[in-house]
Length: 127
Image (cartoon, rainbow, N blue to C red; front, side, top):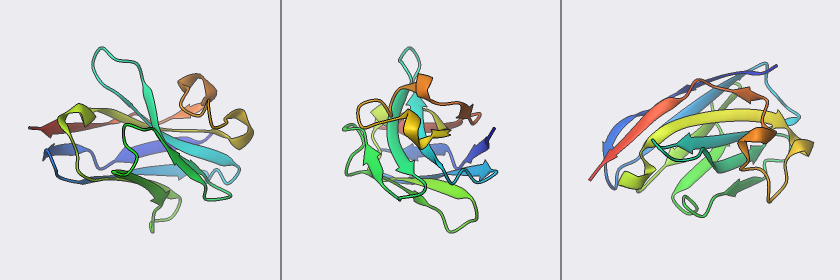
């Protein structure tokens, strides 16, 4: 099973940027890595996916055009660059991994599809 460790959370004012990192061990070359977030009282939401082998990405409408998921320059790391942050982006952010064939365009945002999870990192955006 893949071990995932998130880092990079923090507090920022609206309009600012943060970069989250997800270190994976071992490197899951046949997996997808997806960023989820969960705000208090809300369901966990899949926001960005990266297919490791192909480099294909997809985003939830709530973050499309503001967030970018990519391989990081650091070894075995996937990053989430978050720009133009809004107060509604405040949440606990998780990365998760699963085998690429377990998810599709309409299902990648479902937490039940994922077998490996990090511990989460808090992002707080103030207005």
